Image 1 (cartoon, rainbow, N blue to C red):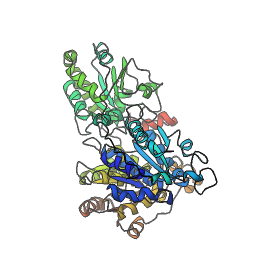
Image 2 (image 1 turned 180 degrees about the vertical axis):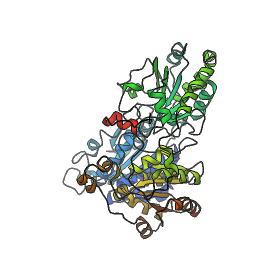
Image 3 (image 1 turned 90 degrees about the horizontal axis):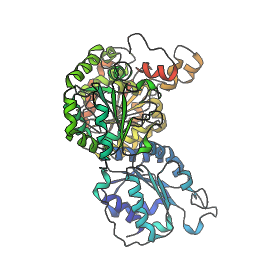
Image 4 (image 1 turned 135 degrees about the horizontal axis):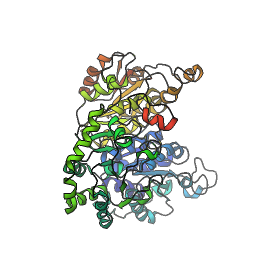
Length: 571
């Protein structure tokens, strides 16, 4: 085999069956090696799309994503996608082709070697490790080190390997040694620190759990349900961890922060817990209502996380427990001290009932059955949830309308909801990521929700779905505007409002021209039949839904972010 085949064979051995890429001369040997290794190459329309697909594949497969392109412009086009993976701690192996070693630094076309543009320096702040291969003998140790770094609990995230084109073709007869299976599941726990939680829980009735993405990555759902039910503890989640706890569970109070539910806001801000146990959340701007101290519990904040450097400086805890979330919950459920919690179950039941009976779980629930035209996104959420199977995987995009759909969306099992709103939120991500997700789990229905502004940026990747027959249902929430930027100016400033309008493009014609099935929806009663038909077709479908740019139900978040008043009765 050669160097290219060795690297791709390493991916294949680790259970990664797809390599998302954009073509170019500098990766020709890698492209040729796809055939001999059995890794299927997926040629994206754009290098950023290739990274987004690898991101979606990694999230759904629970392995990692692999993507690549030439250096130079291919590398810089991938930067936003790599940065997104870095902020979300998504493991992606980025493979880039470089000019031959004999011409580095001499003015060669698309040279991004260390002697010219230096791809490593460009990616230094958005990858966890980078190597430039200088000798074929280094291939095995460098690939091994990058894989371990990419999957490590403290260094989880994208890595990069740059290989000159002449080295890509070099004969290399080493055999790949598979990674130990435990590298995919860290089960570390500081049990002495975990034991200290009992002194804080002593005498406390109001105890709640806030589950973040660390709980999701730990596959902690079963233990989290057990903990909640054993001790009648209410559970709220961060937006990214939306699916870690069943939204129809009697102890689910919904999502915190931006897009947050009324029940979660009631718990965090008014009928507050004495002890709040945070499982794997960095408590960033969206989850913490812009870092307000109002969400702090009355007695103690407990944070459990694998990495102490994930701690937010805004919320120093009374107790930090280093460890894996699932391992902590297992340990917690088996301790003899749990008897003290069973004594306070009745008080906790009363507390949770007070919160749930005070108000509906979500804001503006009347919009779920709205007959408004243009169509209200809440109606889209309601009809989509009624039609789609419980195991549907949804990728939410970057639009004001998507945020409304997210607010009302119910997840029933882990790894059914994906979004990038944590930090980067690049427009167009959801369309490409959903393709990667569908290829990872072809047995599950996969939906992408995307705005028309995002379609203008990376909607072209629907062509990749058609070309490789990835039956994703793409729902375009078409409100004729850059929705989120326009919202503050609606009915306030004619210039900004009109400046941010978009033409109402017919995305069904765009889809059909690229080989997909297109459907256009203008009436609310057309939604359910269209969703049913799209599901039955089992092929790539674009549903163009004509929506309005309605305000998002984020009253509490907007109050903390912008000082906007909270409408009467909304908190």
